[in-house]
Image (cartoon, rainbow, N blue to C red; front, side, top):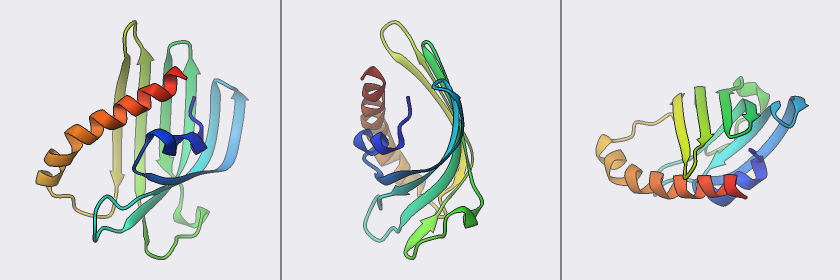
Length: 141
């Protein structure tokens, strides 16, 4: 389901995604791996961000559960002018329904910058809808 190199096709905030290590793959339906994601700067005067995460995917007929959390910062050296983010926990549950996908996301992370609430209220509703449409298209392929 999740292929690191395909994420940047549907997620326009991604500059690059690189699979670092496959920790285990019991089957195509249960695997754990480490990957590095580099995010584009969302606006002028905001630094690019990156994150290194371990991810566990559990995939069954009609649904998927994905759990991700940051690795220690020394797993991959930090880059100049790119701020390393921390993902304490991120859980995504995707369930295929008759006419749509149910998507639940819970996360707690630190992107190392304050984000004004007015900016979030202005940008997120439209960007989330666009992102979600592209995200669900990737499951239909």
